[in-house]
Image (cartoon, rainbow, N blue to C red; front, side, top):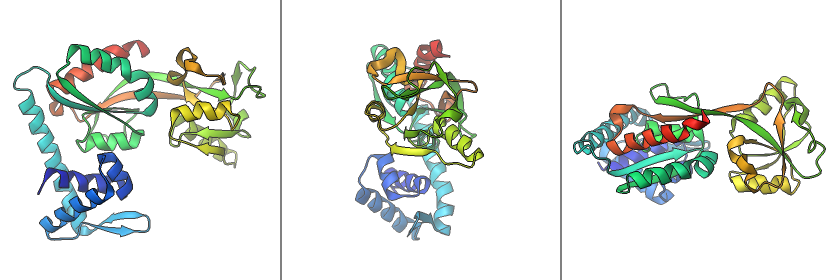
Length: 295
């Protein structure tokens, strides 16, 4: 059995779809499929079956998954232990980040870290909170910025900062001149959204309590698109304050939300100090030190 085969199976089991698992591992779907098939031959049993909703684990797959995850965790721990023998940060470190964090908060952190430890090779992967958490839990990322609290109780989490969301509205919009607006006043507005954000969860919950459904004009996973679509008049958007610092070239109007405001807590997670190499611990310390001002 090869390590890439174990990782392929673990990623597929977590994602439930070949497309999502291949993207998480940064490989093609045929490559992922071949790795899983090789692992099935090694086990002598079918581990997954395709279904209309994605991929389903067989009974053999469910039993194998627990052992595969333990094997990956043990390997990661061994790498960390051996990497610490010299004490000096070196090797590779992987960190995951929410899109806004990766775009607006992480670059100065990485720059500081690189100046101190130029011999460490860094990999940054952006994604949504649940997916990043799963990658950390599976040992495929050393650290990740996610929404607090984590869903995996076994992960070590440190809250870094809390920030509120602002409402972005098109020029000449009826709310453009307001200082503050209530979330309830937005239920008749079309939204430009990045799916899965804390802000849209709050809007959806409020709408459901009123027997309504939010109006979604456009979904996107691109931060720049959110700003440009709002400016073009397609709808309004709720964006974290981090994304709007010093207005960052926004031509849309930004309006604060009345209490109770919508906020998110950003945390740094990992599988525990025992799983961190010297390089990963050094990156964790730089992240904590450089983001302390936001707390």
